[in-house]
Length: 266
Ligand SMILES: [Zn+2]
Image (cartoon, rainbow, N blue to C red):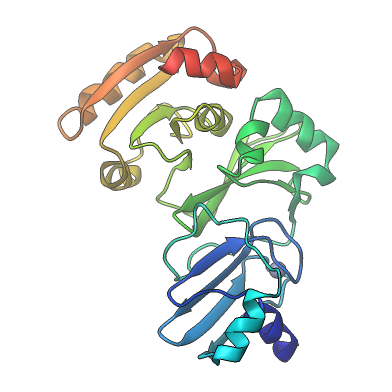
């Protein structure tokens, strides 16, 4: 198995110092595979619990090998979130499957305007077939830090935290973070070309603070009208550390289309 994996990973033609995050060539899961080539070593790993893809080898290919790789026709869909080479943190359980395998999950994703962000590869969304949840993967750069799952039936909790990540769910790469309550709202913002940050509630968890201040130059709090006071509290608290403004929403952001969100946020 290892030998077989080795030749497949070699054939990907990762350049020196390069990283790739993408679909796993072994288990075929979406965006679960990470490979890097650093300091003369090639390392690869798949985040899926059931997948055996894993390796670490000395790798200094000959000119001939590099030539044949260049002609192997393999092209990466460039990992836009691929940077850094260390794989750490949360291990995605094997109960997480592609959202397309669950009509119920697809319906949820479509109804809450998350599909654009998913399709644009701005975030990873999966279906947890054991807990029956639509799962939003929490990333920090190329690292999977945890996940947040929304119940797809009438059971509690409505939102479930997998892992114990000190990172919020974010979607989009702008330097201005737009703070919202939930993951679907963050997806709408990401797809509109901004950066949505899901607070997973109406307050800023202390653990998120350091992350927010290190990633963003400025923040906008965008909460529902019925959470106006919370929004003002958050803005007041954070204004000591970072430029921050408040936007009060007429309706839940996840019920905005991407076009409406663009209009609202510009
Ligand atoms: Zn795999």
